Amino acid sequence: GQQLNQSPQSMFIQEGEDVSMNCTSSSIFNTWLWYKQEPGEGPVLLIALYKAGELTSNGRLTAQFGITRKDSFLNISASIPSDVGIYFCAGRNASRGSQGNLIFGKGTKLSVKP
Amino acid sequence: GAVVSQHPSWVICKSGTSVKIECRSLDFQATTMFWYRQFPKQSLMLMATSNEGSKATYEQGVEKDKFLINHASLTLSTLTVTSAHPEDSSFYICSARRRGLAGGVYNEQFFGPGTRLTVL
Image 1 (tube, rainbow over the protein chains, first blue to last red):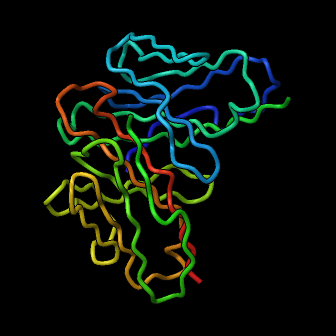
Image 2 (cartoon, rainbow over the protein chains, first blue to last red; image 1 turned 90 degrees about the vertical axis):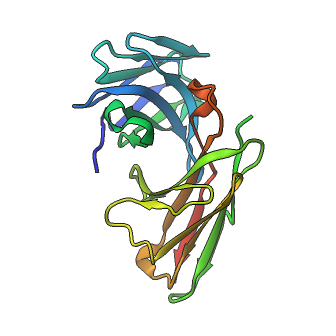
């Protein structure tokens, strides 16, 4: 099925560094979501975006809904060891109307060195 | 809150047996429940979508007779893997969308903790 292009695939950073990851699509989305998944667990919703240009923060996390409606980024500031996990972007395609199924990126695996 | 539970969290079974996985929305009524499958180091693959009281909608390539979904109530959906084989071994995750017209995060998909199925 259709997937989003999420990058980078993985990141190895030092504690305290800032992190940035993004997702792009060839289709327009009316919703962008960012989830975090830890090993052996289900994804947890971090941030939801519903309007082009919208910038939303959740603690040290900030995400934006791209103006073109075809991309979104997630930034994590001052990373800490517990930020480790896989971050997934997900989009809901406006053309699918009320069906509203999410399309997921392949994930960005974040590793943080203390 | 928006808590989704799954049971069991892990199961090991013999090839040829059937396994049932339960998904419950604990503190809200779910309009729709979704079942995903995730292989190691891969993204989530949607298997099917179910609405309470109606038949599930399966994604292309997912065998409906193999993966039986029953959405018995607004808080419970079950996935039964029938005649399981080793290739069915995977991490199965459900999610639920809250009933209501508020929109926004209120109606987003919240995921359960997943069920690890190992078929010997």
